[in-house]
Image: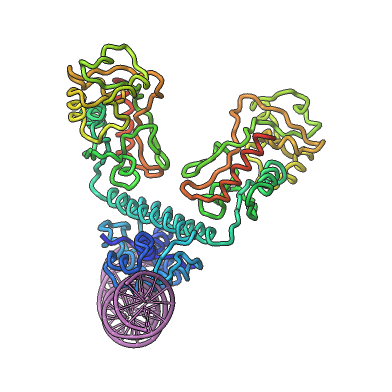
Length: 268
Length: 268
DNA sequence: TCGATCCATGCCCCAACGGTACCCAGCACC
DNA sequence: GGTGCTGGGTACCGTTGGGGCATGGATCGA
């Protein structure tokens, strides 16, 4: 059984997404007829119809739905494989993905510890909202993630546990309390369960201005300034900050970084 | 950046495994020169040398090691994608992978429950030692596995917990005991930590004959006959029998099978 | 019924893949 | 140190098949 080629997957994904041969062909920078034939060929080789075409409508068969999902996964995997390979060839250098707003604290300590350890290698920090995506697609060698994120396919070590705290403006009625509950927070008109994806500085500014109340983790408590107050919140499970990296990708430099990170949180 | 083609991955894996262009070409059923060119082209496109060739010796670079691992993973993923797609097209039918020797008990009950449920579909049972492999590569829709197996990439539900028991011939000196420890077992000359991969019947026969003593799970206790005795073993963590299936592969028929399995173990 | 839309088919061309022949760098053996 | 052998690279050529263009044919709306 001869395997489909990568080209066939790309073509199929384009057609499946547009549900239209003409538009898919345009996106692919080719004419419509060869695309039609490529898809027929693919279906013939796989022995499975993937699309139902009436001349007015293109739809996916059940098998087509499955193959679309799988094709996307495979193409992403291929790109990530190429990136990882190129990364392995480049003069040794590490990329760590960190959530936007993790700037100064934990990460800086970890990197300091790593740089003063044996055989350090230059480290780039890649700030992104989707650290899991970065480490999965080979953009980053390791990522700071949350234990509640999807960690499938990744190896992890626990770093610090983020006991939940609320960040409130200093003058807020709840700011004087010793502890809070989620019910307290949810009654507040400025409370946002999903804080906006902005830098920590802006977030703190907006809290200080009284525009915002958010749930955060204890690691943020050290960098608040005087106009933002942290109060522990009860009844919310503590999350862990973890360091994650792809399974089965040996890298001595990354292992040293992980060890430095673990040592940092143990000692500090 | 143009992606490598599947053909290139196959070629690269062959050369990397043989560390010899001539032999790889022979295995691929082609001549050596086009293979050499294909590999050079691949390296040029990826911008990374994958092999070091002296005219006497072919070796992998560090990047080549990475790309070999990734290529194997991708090719396996492609084959599994094709199988899953073909499976989705076939007149609905489920394949369940079960460890050799799970024959009559739990599985039969589950299948009975499933068949008497709504919209049942023909079920094939695929006996294999590597049920995880079968469900990952698309050969099976679901698998019975052990919670201690590698469950990465799979979704699971717990079924029954296998409290550890030792299977002994009826006349064995330890057979009269209420409980055993691993130390007891390890002193026995016939104890095998890794039982041979044979059917349950043969296994029981060999135990009854006094050739063998093995560690098993409580679910086997119901099918022993009179000449084999089960004794609980202390100090060994209990394993769970789980039902596992690949993530992100929706299948109503499989979901019904999973529900039937869960219902079976809850009620029985 | 006519036109518009859109996928399939027929036909041609060319890029690229693979085969054959040959070259040349190590190595072994005399 | 020649000489032969092994094994990867290079040159050149033939063929396959992927892609473009023109056209057919089906469906749907007006």
